[in-house]
Image (cartoon, rainbow, N blue to C red; front, side, top):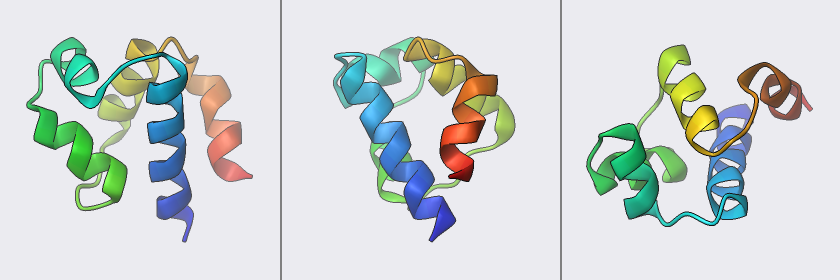
Length: 70
């Protein structure tokens, strides 16, 4: 359940940043399938990927952790 919440937040942060999955994938230098699979929970991300995702969406990684914990 907690990981599903994270996936929803990742999607929300991307949308709030006004980016499509393709746009975010380009910023992260990953294929669009990486963003899609991460957002639907088919692919787990490591902490460094989380930080990169947050920064690409203009979210402070350390502050975003509290949103995930709620």
